[in-house]
Image (cartoon, rainbow, N blue to C red; front, side):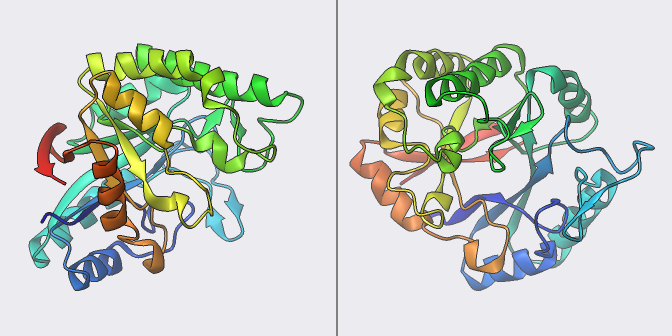
Amino acid sequence: MMFCDYHVHTEFSDDSEYLMEDVIKDAINMNMDEICITDHVDYGIKNDWDSGVEIEYRDGMPLANVDYPKYFEEIDRLRKIYPIIIKQGMEFGIQTHTIKDYEKLFHQYDFDFIILSIHQVEDKEFWTNEFQAGRTQKQYNERYYQEMLDVVKNYKDYSVLGHMDLIVRYDNQGVYPFELLKDQIAEILKIVIEDGKGIEVNTSSHRYGLKDLTPSRDILKLYKELGGRIITIGSDSHKKEHLGAYIKETKEELKKLGFEEFCTYEKMKPIFHKL
């Protein structure tokens, strides 16, 4: 049975100090068959290392995107040393006004896999509640999904939508009713499916203490009803104790929802495996 983790952060992400080589060693010790490294790029709020702009630091960590040449060199080096399949991906934190930056980046390198995530809207963060400030729960939920809809309409170089209902993690007012967002979410999912893309199940819901999966079971059911088949599973790990966590349990949850397969990727093409 294929065991892999398709959402993994290393020291090349601004919020992780987990050395890529240690990630690979730990994955091998866990008997993983395959791993995909997906470090952060968040244009709009972070700069590239070669941008000519001085890099700021927060809590000793650089507020910068992946150092691309070093990143791909390290993946290539580790592939030659270790007996595990290592796929090269990234997590693109796209906003409508940064789409052109990602189009340029995507065509500069060879990728196996891209997670499209909405991490900010209007360059405002969710985790600080800057984005939610001054908006009602209805307004910030609808604005979040509107940004996602606008992005998937206009950006196509990705594999799956990451942690699709991320806003729930940072909603101090509780979970906004799915039924009030269903039409908006369905519109997004229809485009994703039509474009041959997928969605991920992000197992970090467990460590954040959420009562549902990420995305929610309602979203996953809707995705399946609309004909969605492509699903990846990732831990969103930033440290050793996160790696590979709850992936086996998530497969069981997906089976309960009627899914039969999950995907890995090679050169941006999905490969289906039995759950």
